Length: 413
Image (cartoon, rainbow, N blue to C red):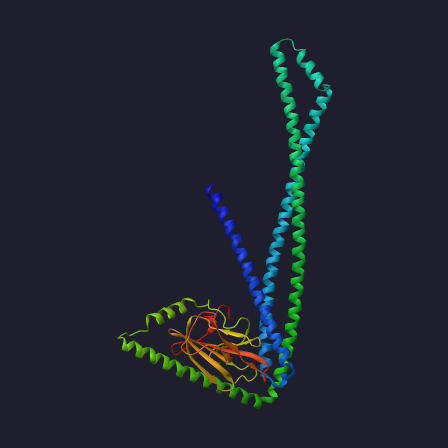
């Protein structure tokens, strides 16, 4: 009994795990589809100037990456469907075997019942049975004959009930089989559609890769212009880096001065608690925007056109919707609001030892020194008319060190 209960527990747990993995798959697929939608919009807006724009190339590269991820999702879905179809086919076979077994049992019952009915009619029914009892030689024989008649009648009745029961069970099995067949047909159709979507996406990816190669070959001809543009962007990134580092140095200096005044060596209890909670939420922190797609990841990257050119991104660049609201990713205090030339406003929030930076804002709805909560609005992303996009540059620092936001934000990339 204990073994059976344990087996039942394992079955239930496995079903829950499968259901969860399916839900996760649906969520991941939906996220990728939304990201593809955003980059599609970006490609539409910039395609008129694509021969002069590196932004179009970045969006196109991101689109290819996302569509390849979607194909991977479709492959997983197809495998899940194939497994389900295999299980359904197995159930169909088992149901057919059950029906065959029950039909054989019913046939045996019918044969036995026919023999009883034949014997019953041969003895000319109930009247003959009554005469059979009355014509007994003595009371003892009459009593035995009465018991025999009762047993005979009960047996006939039981056969009739059993036949009816077997017939109902066969009907139920046939109905169950029809439903299983219907589910099989639906799953087979869905699998076919998934295959069609997969090959359609593979075809689109192939076309986009060809477009990317052609675009790179044309952009190479304008090498001087683009290298100048890249140099200017890197200069602005370095300026932002220097400004942030200077602000963080000032913040750390302030914290140390306060600690010295209160004869403490470390951060305040509140700052220590914030640091601890921030660290505990690694890989679980929310996105700084509701919807968006990362077009530039953190770290040192070789340029996709000019391989000798290397750029370092201190954070991540997220393309989002026009006038998208920007939210604090965790509880903290607004340390500084400043302007980055040509890039809009920036907000730096302290979370104890950690700092988050939100750059590329047009409107800011918070003030320096104000405390904010997780997911609280701090401003809106600036729309760049020239580049025809809304881009948020986002960074996370731990003390003086920049860290990869992809290690902290939930499923950032």
